[in-house]
Every structure is written in C-alpha cells, then in structure tokens.
Length: 388
Image (cartoon, rainbow, N blue to C red):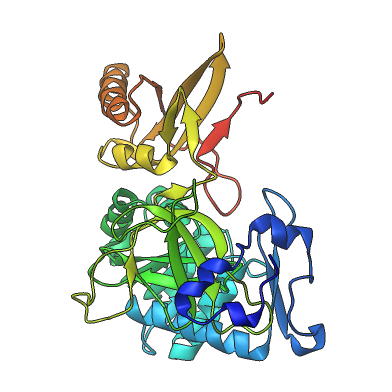
C-alpha cells in the first residue's frame, strides 16, 4: 500500500507506517537512507559491523547538537557536573560511544580526558594522576580495570572516582552492584544505538529502577516480537523507536530487537516525568533456543552474580552431541579454589541455573583470568551447533 501524508492524522496512525530494520539500512549502505545531501553533513559514525555490513549514520551540525544535548542529560542525571574530571576510556573512531560521551561531557563543562580504549594500567595511572572523578565505558571493561588494579596492588576505593556511566552491552543488576562495590562509586546504565544517534536514548536515575527515555527526541513503541502488535504496560516486548528531531538520517519505526518493558508510572520519585523502561533483558535475535527452552544470556548472568566466589568473566558454550543440544557454562572463580570448593560451587550453580533453564547444564569452574576477552565487548555466547 502506498502511504501518503493524508494517511497520517494522529499519533496512533504511526502504526500504518512500515518498520525499518537493520537489513534495510545495510541494503542501502552507506548513504542510501540520507534525507539530505552529504555536503550538509559534518560527521559520520558506524556500527562495529561484527555481524554484517556496518550501519553508517551521518550527522548534520544540528544532529550533533541534539546528540550533545541528550548525552548531557544522561551524564547530568548520572551525577556529572562542570566540577568533574571525566575520563573516557572508549575507542575514538567511527564507533559512536566515545564521541557521544565526549560531546555530552563538554556541553556540561566537565574536564574531559580522552584516554581512548585499552592500556588498562595506563588508564588507572591517568585516574590517579589527574584525579578522575567520573568514568564511562562498557560494564565488562570496568570489571577488567578492577582486575588489573588488584594485580597492581591499586586500591580503587582510594581513587577519586565517584560515578560511572556504562552501556553498549548486557548489564544486569548483579554486575552493576559488583562494580559499585569494587569501585565504591555510583553506577548508572545508559541505552542507545547507532541508528538513533549512538548512546543517549535513555539512562537510569538515582532510583536505579529503570531508564528514563527522552520522549522529545525519540518516540517509543513496545511490540510483541512475534506478531508485532502493541503490548500493555509492564509487559515485555521489543522496543521500536522513531527519531523525532534528526535531520541527516531520520528513521521511522526502527526494530531495535531489544527486549524490555515500560513501567506504568507517571512521575518517578526522582521528579522526572519522562517515561521509564526496564533494563534490557536481551535481544529478540540473541535469544537462544536450547532443548526447546528460550534462554537469554542475562538470565544466566543474574544467577552467577549472586555468588561472591564467581568472578566477572563467564561464557555459554553450546554444542550438539548425539543430536541433543548441550550447554556448558564456563565460569571464572574470583580467587583460586580447591578441587572440593570448585565441585561444591559447580553443584550450587547447576542447581540454580537449572531452575531458570529447566534442564541440567554442565558447569565448568575455571581459574581466574582463564577467559581471554577480545574487543570492546565481552563475548558471552559461543554457539557451535551446525545449522542445516
């Protein structure tokens, strides 16, 4: 059906419009979705492209201003002020993360240290030397820094870091609490995606019970990922987003594949009136089906983080043996354990994870630092099953 402007008269009429998917953007890469000329754009960024052709997004100067504004809101809600020393240990490049945080922190007026990715020992030395008070990044890197600090004999709680804002990957409450404890800082969760602007779509406030979404810049729908019909408040669904203020590459009804729910709450205890959604449970396209059971990696992490003996690194490995799917959960221990201690931990984890999965997984307790982390984000799932 050809849709004209006459079809759209109320906000509810958005349901008449087709969805936009990542494949649509890839099929028209790099500039096929632009609604303005390249000469009117001042910057571009792109997704990592780890699962296919990178998605490229171009920004006009006004788009950069809007991005800076929403990021400033997120950082301000997380406690950043112009008195802070803000360290940004994210790779500067086509990845959106570093620049979004950089622009937002500059708009607030904080002193920015563009430390970039990696070199963990150097990152910690910079924090101590410059008196860093606020850090950003991905949650798994914050845990990596805590491990390096322990190896170097650095007491993180003696640093001046008091706040952190993390995103770009699955981030459970259990992991958040661990980071808060090891750093003695307040930790906030940020949500965003390249297709919208990068980070800056929503962030949790000091109540830490949901993320406020900037409704003046993004229109949010929650739909059942199976039939694409709207779901009720407090019911999990797929987040579908429409940009409201983008010039270079506005997007209608983008299927994020992220699963969450919107809270039935008019005004938050923090005083904000923007709608609030839950933390991201997982992605509809990352959901695993093992022995007929739907599984999100976050469900596994939620169990693991309850055990103080368990380290922060873990992964799921799925194989097929005799035509039956087998799940092995590899878990680093926080400290070296005896054989008896490892066996006891294995049994406890197996019991608790079975209550989530229904079937018995194999649990393998590894020594600390056994799982090598490559790249910016932690790789939690290795699926070795052969697809027909």
